[in-house]
Amino acid sequence: MPPLATLLTDFGTADGYVAEMKGVLLSGAPAAQLVDVSHDVPAQDVEFARLAFARYWRRFPAGTVHIVVVDPDVGTSRKALAIESDGRFAVGPDNGVLSPAMLLPGARAVSLHIPQGASPTFHGRDVFAPAAVRLLNGDALDDLGSPYSDAALRRTPEAQRRQDGGQDGLVLAVDRFGNLITNLTGRGEGTVEIAGKLLRVSRTYADVTEGELLALVGSHGLIEVAVRGGHAARTLGIGRGTPVTLRREGGAA
Image (cartoon, rainbow, N blue to C red; front, top):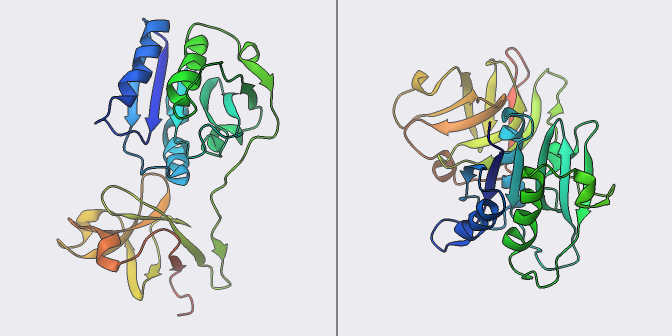
């Protein structure tokens, strides 16, 4: 199997920035297979990228090199990292975007050297892609930099348990469909209260009519609020950070 690398950025595809990174990767590791996860992360939205990275990084085979570049502090004193975790690698800025891998027991990180002449505005091309090339070519993590144990970590806030058996939480993100992803967990029972609406937890989008609001458990195991065929965030006029409550059957109103 050829060496495998994934790319997640907020670069978009209109300006050629992704192509520059791929040029470095394929020049240094011509046999590598490159997988574009997404380049449509909202600009400089580290938290959105962290949540996206958490979804997929362990679904790729051992040995995969994940490149994550959402880096609003590029060119500052923030560290550039390479990580080894659960048999996979990740490279990216030390701003918490790599936390899903860094928080796993046994994860190790090194602080990458910033090459002389690296652009202070494009570490994706000049720092992270070259580091990924070395990993793709079989270099050991410890050969890439100095051991680093002070990585910035971000954690998904846990919903608070209620005395009635429900949970108080918040909206973590809005996906491209306009679905409101919350930090509530459930198995498909209860009622969700959000923005003054009460929504029984459904099994699938088709459980309601076109244009109707619903709550359901998404593929990530978190409860989301959606509009069938529509955009829940715009419909409700809310976004990240909005409070949300899960009430269990028979719980207090």
